[in-house]
Image (cartoon, one colour):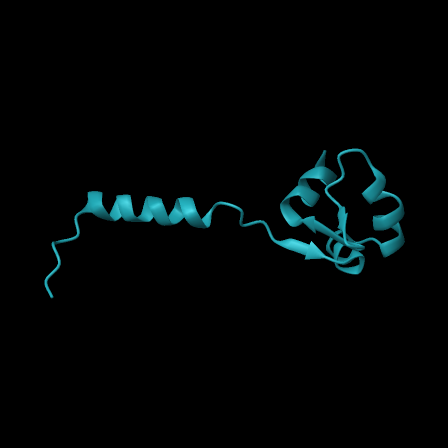
Length: 79
């Protein structure tokens, strides 16, 4: 099977599509209070009782489980 030659323009077009797909929604989800606490160097009580209750906090609860998107968590703490 013969393919047409790969030109720089074709390669750029291919790579731009791959980059667009892989760069979207790549933030890691951190599940559980202990894991969130370990990531930022605090205890589970602080995450649940203080951080999760702050306005705009990235720490969320669903079905009794806490989670946070890592990039949102770090950005929130840098404010």
